[in-house]
Image 1: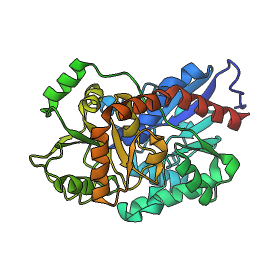
Image 2 (image 1 turned 60 degrees about the vertical axis):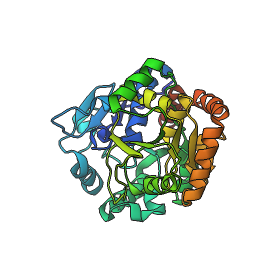
Image 3 (image 1 turned 120 degrees about the horizontal axis):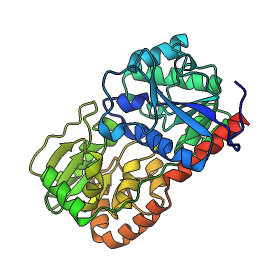
Length: 367
């Protein structure tokens, strides 16, 4: 098939990988891929996204239902990833038809003969290998090698990841910064009330949102709060990941698990502050999600979360429990100021901009 310039009204068929929507913990990579898929048709005419994922008997959970048609490959999950990397099979176009471009929306590439773009949100496995399994590190390393050989361009959600990719040897002209967005629909008082009733939440609470895994640093956050009995209780929202978190539910720490999308804005809006002192992040979507609801944010300095916060959050040393607590106190005392700064920051983070930058990358690769 001839390559087609995206500035025309003619169709460009883009294979768009969405296997992560079926992961036990889809995470921010799924959120970003789905939001771009929703917005891209409105920012660039003539682009047809054809979703591609493995063979699954059930649809993904409702919050991660793709907005586009998804066609199935004969393998799924780890088998799909290994077969794609080791054997170059199953080749995407054999199952979805001819494509002009394949966009791999995570670091793990699918097999294709078409030009390829990949989104790399982070390379945390290089910085903190202790947070990953040996097999996971192997898959990620092989994926990076494959992308260096095959990807015409990699899209990075933060400048921190851009720099990581450059250090890994990706040529500068093949690395593009494509920042992420956030939905900014403000929660209503009814949304907050219904969320409190749904999850039996207290009036005042601190909030942690994220998959429960070591790099999220939940254990040190809990340690910081245990040192100060006058702190508000902590509500922990997120799916169980892996690793020994060493945190148990008690009167001051409430685990509510994965939160359905319909309750998420009310959960953020009802919180006194979002506490997000991660050891490492590729981006940190909960920061923007909290800011969109006017909730003060406490997050980590010197990693991508500082970049995402962009001066609108309290920054702390994630390795120091007292620094985390001091940041929480500032957030509670300066709530009005931080709320205003956060709302402004969130309003400038639009998914339509993410989609437009993605479309420009398609344009450049296919030109």
